[in-house]
Length: 220
Image (cartoon, rainbow, N blue to C red; front, top):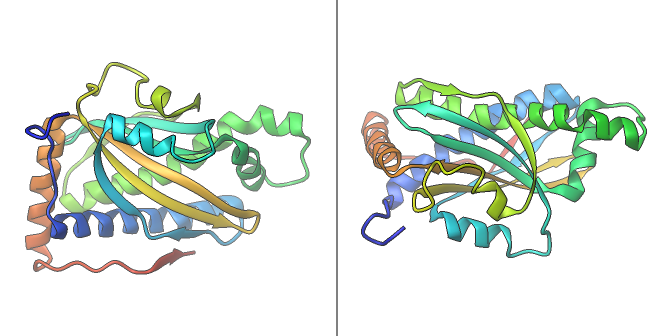
């Protein structure tokens, strides 16, 4: 994506978007708590708009190379693909927290796809539905799919959105009794959707009086 086509957000727009995503993951934490039957803590998300290549480079910065992703397509006034990603090595602990009980590794592997898809569905839909409701719009969301790989594979699952379109990249940590899991939320948006998102954020800021606040943590 060139500088001429990159859509940037003002500091106020970025604050508003961070607040909405924070609210979305907070709502998702309630659903996750009910699913895993224990406290779920989600950090305040850090939000940035990046090129697809920058997003891939961010995922490759750490020592963790193999990741698990749950992805869903969404369509409406804004359209794109939403992904939840976290280290593959942590996936079994997350699955164990979701399904509960003292299951064997073979049983966990058998349940992995379903448990991860359900986790991703809760988190991704929590964010997408909060954005849609706050903007007074409707989004249609596909069923979740689970894939294993690295950043380049996740951001090139299909030819759409285009390689030069933007990525709304969200850094988040969520903690269970079993330990912290570092995760990433990403939304691949085409250029018209990024423009629309900027317009919707501007209208949202006006509707709330031009000020935003973000709490320190989400707990449920």
